[in-house]
Length: 160
Image 1 (spheres, rainbow, N blue to C red):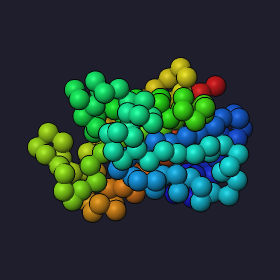
Image 2: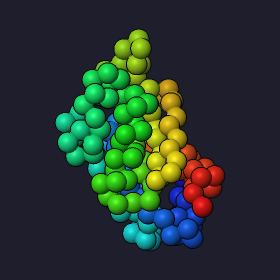
Image 3: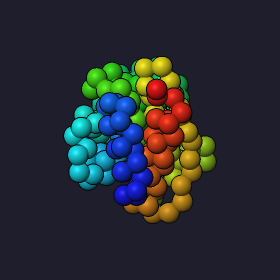
Image 4: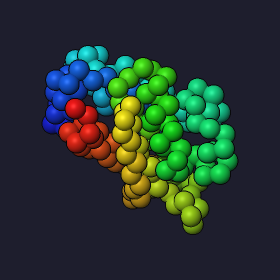
């Protein structure tokens, strides 16, 4: 993880990009991981823990329609979380994570371990779907790792 963080930090600093995160199922873990890297204040502006739908809507800007039609754990919500936190915090890139960490809360359609991760810039957005296995803690850690991997690729491919 340390190597991945260092690579992301180097790329963000080199391209003079800033980052913000909006976390639901990871509950601040991604922000904590990012800030464990010395010098992260050069690129990380902050994060919003949007655990409730109320915070997703009122603070981050996820549309009521999106939450009602697709649910809090959906591709659409993850995308709006990423783009919403980018706008709210005034960053170049936003990350949105929403999912079901378990051990309860899953359904047949949306099982425990289902996580959507989105990375958004002004011109590009990517959203990925995962089903992670393991304990609640392991699912949260895997979601954070996947977020960083997506971010690294996103910076490399889409942000000039």
